[in-house]
Figure 1 (cartoon, rainbow over the protein chains, first blue to last red):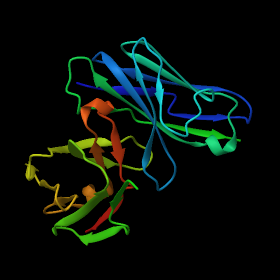
Figure 2 (figure 1 turned 135 degrees about the horizontal axis):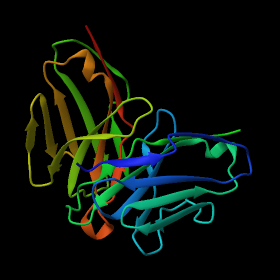
Figure 3 (figure 1 turned 120 degrees about the vertical axis):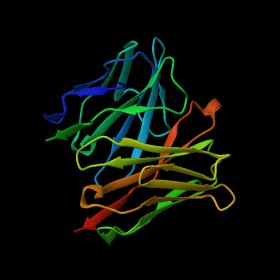
Figure 4 (figure 1 turned 60 degrees about the vertical axis):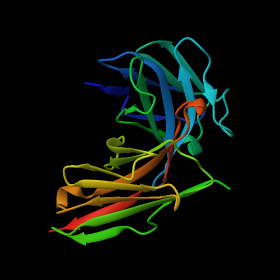
Length: 117
Length: 114
């Protein structure tokens, strides 16, 4: 149980275009989803926290107009990287907390590798 | 400033030995601490959680300790195997009124040689 999927697993896009990444909880309802970014050999950095039906809370230094987060249902959150640039190339990972789960349990997705050319 | 640091160097050990990874933090008051395993190109996989009022937790060949005075956690893998080779991440769980956020260390790369 507690499986989180991400789609796509890899994406290559041209500079200036937008790309959408989906995060789904497959067998549970997630009231909260988290989006992280990880550069090579570095830590996972929390970008934003999204609660179903409300606006996402972004971490300091993360541009909310560039990284659009939509948590429209209890099983789906999307991250859209708008006007992507090569410096946005990274590994994007989501995690989800179950509606009836403990606050200290997060289930991680497999990640999405974004390459901007 | 707030910091979380893991073994700065990669750890190379011989199969069968015990691997010990460290996680130190400053200026945080975590409610709990978690350890994850991450393989290249994959998301983190949860291994163990230890709460602030617990000293030690075990799960099969894994053991984690948590010293809130020293602000340190140690993660041990006993009888290590080549399949244990991966990057191990510690993560601080902040108090619940901060949304239960996780703050990750940079990870320690463990290599177990046969």
